[in-house]
Length: 171
Ligand SMILES: NC(=O)c1ccc[n+]([C@@H]2O[C@H](COP(=O)([O-])OP(=O)(O)OC[C@H]3O[C@@H](n4cnc5c(N)ncnc54)[C@H](OP(=O)(O)O)[C@@H]3O)[C@@H](O)[C@H]2O)c1
Image 1 (cartoon, helix red, strand yellow):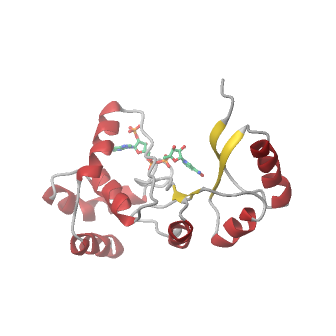
Image 2 (image 1 turned 120 degrees about the vertical axis):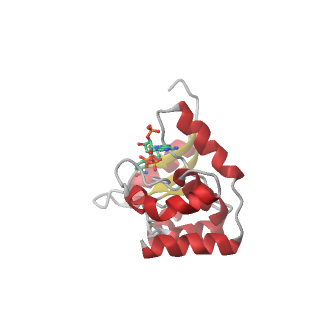
């Protein structure tokens, strides 16, 4: 990687077969040696975050989360409380989880009304949801990248977001 130090090392999964003292202990050793600056975790529960924090400081969590899949809300609330970054993967439904695309029809009219795409609506929803939210939409297309970046401009009232959340729940 031609780097002296990795600024943020996101451990992809905690291996249930390996004690966290061992797996995260290795990251702590790398951190103490100056090879890693910060450590983050992925697909974890609040209990797992708390257990990991006993071994090494944790600055960010990367769990699956989007407007149609809010199972990780507990972890998001924990990140807010503890001032940690929350990096939702599949922020727009993802390649492997097409739930947003299935809900797309319900959101289509709302997106049109606000002159944005459904994807932009989903990204704007994430950005207004929490100050610790750091969406990482994946794309191989420059046009999509520009469209996704522009989502930050969409500002709706709390009532409008509630209406959109209701549409998603009903779809
Ligand atoms: N920690 C984990 O366990 C985990 C798991 C999976 C992914 N990730 C990471 O999460 C990040 C997000 O990737 P993701 O796969 O989860 O899914 P995602 O960002 O929710 O969706 C990516 C898909 O959406 C399409 N897309 C992007 N912008 C679009 C737009 N404006 N309009 C229509 N389609 C659009 C992309 O196709 P185009 O290329 O055509 O734009 C791609 O197929 C990546 O960095 C990935 O590495 C992490």
